[in-house]
Length: 255
Image (cartoon, rainbow, N blue to C red; front, top):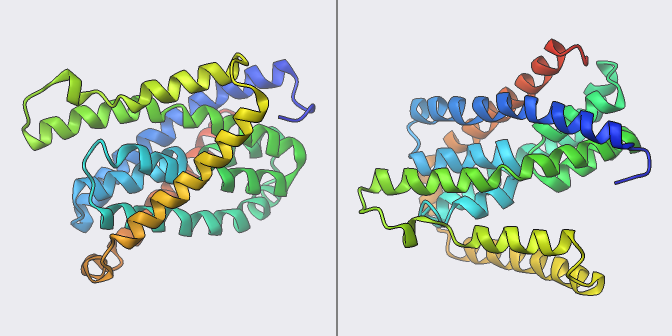
């Protein structure tokens, strides 16, 4: 993050982001459940869209999909819905932030908790100002950590819904330990900077390769059967999260 953030700013934004996140995640998954049922979507597709919208776009979808045994077409639909509204948010958020007269901190908090994907948060944040971009990025990184408990919760839900016998070895998503371990090693400097940069580039390549594989396994005829309902779901949830985050900030006197 840039030098414009002091330790006091970091602690303040971290505390505020957790408060706003509680409401946006509740809105996302609670509202997503109701919207998904009203639109007749299966629970896996509905929750993938909600996770992509509420947590971290494609990363959240990619993390949760194998845990709930989601089909490729559901993953493709969730990714499409998330990325489509990300592009709209990148264009609209800076304009709305200036129109509402937001401070850098208030805007960064709003963008960091309401815009879906990390890259989109960075784009929308720095389009407003450098300080707002720093705030938004930090808020988004905090928000991304909610992937861990969410994956664990959906692992339990999938077992209960599918009626399988509970087996700790199959229930626990072991890749989470790898995620936490590498994050810890990188944070304390155990991974050399050159190796860290290489692994970051490799992870981006593997993510693109995984998305390409999903696309190759997706039958558009199957996706057409669902029509525009998943996109409508994504629009409604995205709008609800944007409004919820803004209302919470207003209630806290930030806007």
